[in-house]
Length: 298
Image (cartoon, rainbow, N blue to C red; front, side):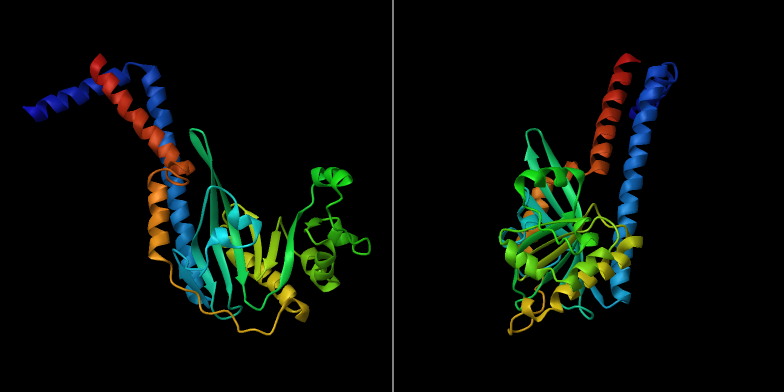
């Protein structure tokens, strides 16, 4: 009896929707949203699988939850302390070519009222106890940067190297040390890079990053260009001290991983912040409301 009632009810719902173009439009929009969300999730799954496979064949170790051996928010470079919450995932540890380097997905979240704002980056990180670089930040120079520098005079320019200074804004609290760090050999490396690279350094850290997650097809070039930047700084003996090489990376701390997963579940930064998950959640809730309304009206 219950199955007959259910079948009749669903038949009534179908006939109600069929006779109302507004509901046909609504269900079409929700179906498209669900499809977009599922495609997004599938493509991200493929991207991660491809990155993991790349590591297996190229002297790189894949870690879903990378154990970097230090707290992100306690590290000196400014990027690692942004947001109310941040995390790294899907990392490749450079075990053969440039030990001490990681290539990662980095994300930070800013809480804002009823919604959170998430920012993703493709991040290459190099940490070595032998490094000793002054705090600096390098980014592609925009018209807004040039206009602002007329007042602030923060940008460090090299008139004899217009190819570098015309493309990048270079800043740091100790201008003399930063200017000495960027030798002609290092600036030539940056002149040869493609795309909108940003670089930060402080103490034993060097970061090379781009806004947005790096597609799997672009990952080999991402790694090679990041390695070129790291090597340029390491080639100058003034940037390294005579101390032991970095210790092997630690396994991911179980407490930190559990905390990150809990934060995602309660919506503290991830969770429904992802575009695909938001699309799926809204479409599903809308679908259930529409079905209940159709049942009541049929």
